[in-house]
Amino acid sequence: MKNNRVIRATTGLSASEFNQLAQSFGQENQNERWIRYERGLERGDRERKPGGRRIGNLRSFAEKLFFILFYFKCYPTFDVLGIIFNLDRSNACRNVQRLTSILEKVLDKKMVLPKRKISSLEELFEIFPEVKDLFIDGTERPIQRPKDTEKQKANYSGKKKMHTRKNILITDKNRRVGYLSPPAEGKKHDYGMFKELFPPELFPNSITLWLDLGFIGVEKDYPDATVMMPKKKPRGKELSDEEKAQNKVISGLRVLVEHAIGGIKRFRITTEKFRNKKDTFNDDVMLISCGLWNYHLMCC
Image 1 (cartoon, rainbow, N blue to C red):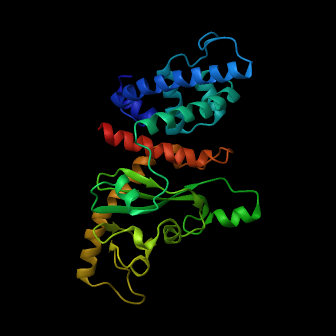
Image 2 (image 1 turned 60 degrees about the vertical axis):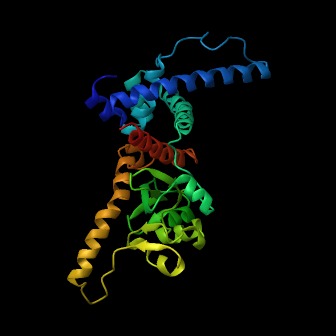
Image 3 (image 1 turned 180 degrees about the horizontal axis):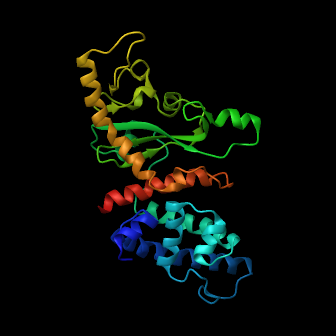
């Protein structure tokens, strides 16, 4: 892949980033083929070694990587994806499921996937070594309206006026996503999720937490934490010029987490209404998109 403009538009990565990732992807793909072969031998239903079958339409490792990145970046239906790559829609679906798993393993080995749990100060500093500032925000992704009435109520976001799934992200000043929370229903409030995820003693006063007004109450519940948050306009009153200037400065620095979210959402699979039916795939998609963004930051 040499055309930077085309490769960015179709995969979300530059040509050099794609070519580097393709090498690791090819190795992991080969490893997966041998693992499946050995499992087949143990079950007694496998005779041929990897490579001894009909060659599919996705011939090379680079084509397979392009296929799965194209799906994440452009998020076509399986019918459209099959037409583009000359595959049956069911075969396109199977390839997405299989190659997504391989892509996640590759990104995990490159240590770019965000962590999913922080339960102690030691774990926090392991994820963010020598950190002085943490930028925290919530993000929502639209989903199809659930058929179940209770699920409809739980996933309806009053803020977005649609059914969504929500995550909390923590980034550093370099916009690297170090933590991605498990997904929650769109009805949940950002700060409600935050309190459920992190104990009060987790954040020492040596680390500054940069938050938006969706986390009002954190100063009371986390008294040891150093918090930087815009001041909310009092009801029926106006902020002073000094308070407005301070809010502008805080927002100008806190925007780093917004840039990180924007980088993740270059992949349309995280912004368009999610159509896939597999329960865990929604979370896998967000995790891998964060990993691809961190991989981009590592390479650029």
